[in-house]
Image (tube, rainbow, N blue to C red; front, side, top):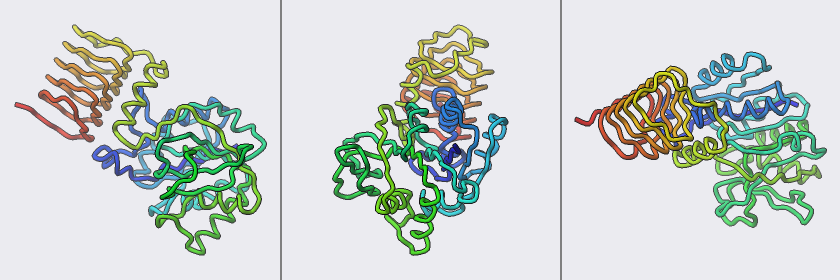
Length: 330
């Protein structure tokens, strides 16, 4: 089975970080969002990947090629924001007619991947949410089979949100439906959505079952990123902290500390991830993500997201500081 991962989105809700970094490469619990996804799929036995890239796509290609040299990769470029359906349609030559597993590149889920892959029917991951209007929504019959799929309905008739996991056996039919929608300019909210193409398949008699996902993080906002970081650290899904170059400091677990960091005269934790080669001195940091090569001095941080190469000298309680930014409090 081939995994298809759309990662072409701009990530406007995570600015300023996504001005210089693709959303899928923002670190959570010691590694990028995308790495969590790829690692799970490799563990499930998948070694053939199609990445649909766009904005800052060269950084994604570089990261994957450097860190996963043994997997088969194909990079498809989506130059315009026309929706997830359009993205999958662009990858038709790479996908051909074999079964595929589509996983959105900005979501982290904990599921039994083998159970999804081995199911005889096509499977869509779902989770009950309080407000489904911002998601694709599935309506199901009493047996759990999907009867209707709607993208971001104004008046939802179901609270089952699509979480960005789609195992599709009938890829030829999927491509036919995508092409029909694109050729006939059939859009929802001005985009070609994967949801509409799958509804076309349901109308044509194809069977889709649901898979209930317990843990799902749509990592498109700072608050969700920090919640995801906290949970993954507490569950132990991270490398043990690197204790080299830690001087006169207190580490309150769970904490991830990358290679090459220099930490002195500080209190770190709980629920903190620090990227490689960061420098932290005379600081107190909790409930935060610190990017690689960041430099923090005399800082007090809580619930903060600090980008790569950022520099902070001073004191503040909560920040959303993008890559290469510099702030000094005198």
